Image (cartoon, rainbow, N blue to C red; front, side, top):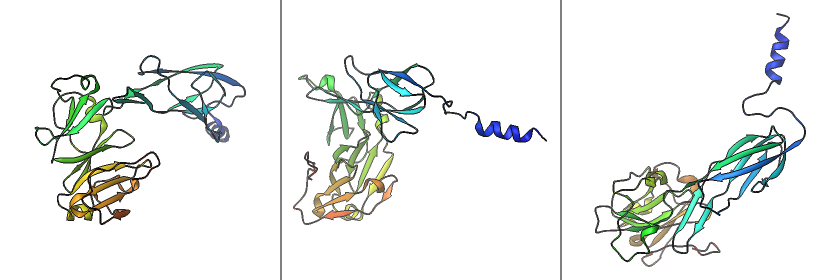
Length: 262
């Protein structure tokens, strides 16, 4: 029994999973990336457990011997015709040595690098064409598609998920579904509606995302544009619009300018 206090102290003071040993000094972190096109750099920052602001670690950087979370920024490659977006997950590291090598793995967002159109004359209602084919004067074959009721407008959220206006609903198609080419049905993983869309005919017809993730939906038949807060769009169902713009004569397309005006 007399050894129990010592055992308790060892448990309390010992190193826990994911923590760094209590050491002084600093080391150099060398961050490399994989999955990006040659010559394309990434913006990666490090935030320590005891830090209030992140520091860039794109170049070799001196860091105290502590725990850090490396956060990679999205990388956008714009060809002038089609954009390709690459994304990587955050990684936690423990600086234990004078030099530490870290690799950040990037992957292309599956819905990027493609031209997306809606079609009323196809077995598939949302078609995606690879960027490599859109510059050719020939018949294009869709690389990916969604399937379901005839859609109106489509839009993408910040994570690359595809949203489609379909009758009295707005449906989300998870971006990972489009990572495999070929004509086959994709299934929506979330469906939203509002009282205004249910009452309107033919329902939703255009979508646009604000910079904060809020979604704006137009209903031509009702002459209204509904504002859906991002926080209300995590589960399927009927949601209450944060605000409604009324008395618009048959609203069709929606878009935001650089200043955030609709």
